[in-house]
Length: 81
Image 1: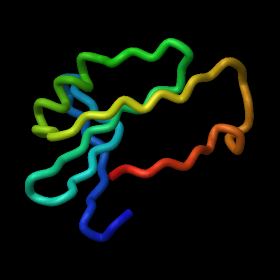
Image 2: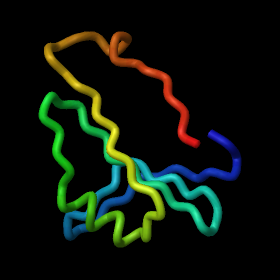
Image 3: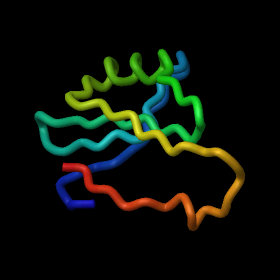
Image 4: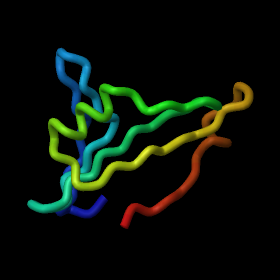
């Protein structure tokens, strides 16, 4: 991760939650929801969390799961730009 990017997790007592937030400068805040499921859905908590942190970009990362498998098989490489 570049030194100018600051990653963190966001959660409130009220249930707002963002799995990964990346602060990438004063005008760019990226919110990422990560789901490992064959039927992923976005939660209200994610949407509320995005509003709370004033996310400028929102992403939904889905990792489909059809059966149990080792961690090595699910590792994928991707770039956020």
